[in-house]
Length: 392
Ligand code: ADP
Image (cartoon, rainbow, N blue to C red; front, side, top):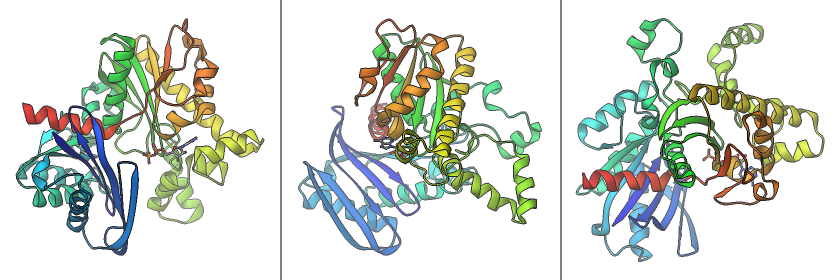
């Protein structure tokens, strides 16, 4: 069967067409700058890449473009060949403990959760509506970034803030990157041949989050109410003392929301290095001996090691750590320094394996705790959920 996995942002729409259960990708692409006259549509299939620029005024037009291209390039003969659509949704709150078959009621609930994810959920809803309009007769499934973390217990997800904030406004830790953490941890448990294994997934891309997974269940994760919490990232600060907001606001005579924006967009690698949010640039500058790039890198390594140490204690042991996403899959220096920083846990790096790419074990054969590179695949996870719910 053929399933489309969709990730709709406010001005973009990414998609992948997969044959399931083989998990083979037939086509993938994205529409960027939706809402503009010079939108760009890119599609890749059969080793070909085609890019066109044309006006795309809304998401519905973007969906039409995708479907027209799939038919024009004979990737499918007609709309009827598509058996289901899986939609990535960022925030599922406490309402969605698993993926959900989309109904009008589900769309309304996803909209209602927009207070908790004002930048993302409205865009996700727009994508869902556009696809449902064009493909009304197939199953649509919402797959949430948060549901994998709904297994956390109160001690892990509640902030020690006035309890009414949680009751009235839903202020708690939700966590993100759940689809990726689930995909990677499931694969790690297969590689360990131990469904009850304890693993820590380091999803390190533009956003970075760690997740402690015990026997297949997320028990703690580093992102919180929003993706700003946790370790430093490309442009985000991760955890800081919240008093900084008021102090800098007063000193610079700028409103607090602007200072908050600095924590989100001008911090992390970018803020400390002073020149780049990209780990490639920062690591290269560090290797040239540039002091602030070195500091940015060392802060990141320390803070990731802090989380790994705390998850080791919280889970009462550890079988493997897994690296995934842009940095996790491609940056040997970052992986090497994280593994070195947590050596006390009984982990030894295989330097040669660490220099390579693709799924592999990068710890030595006798390392007590294993380390893996496991490339993430959120689209496959989304398509698997569509197949599962279609059959249930
Ligand atoms: P997103 O979180 O937007 O999905 P990705 O998972 O694609 O992002 O990760 C993007 C980041 O991965 C880039 O900002 C860059 O820092 C890092 N990255 C990508 N390729 C490499 C590489 N070859 N070496 C080091 N870092 C890389």
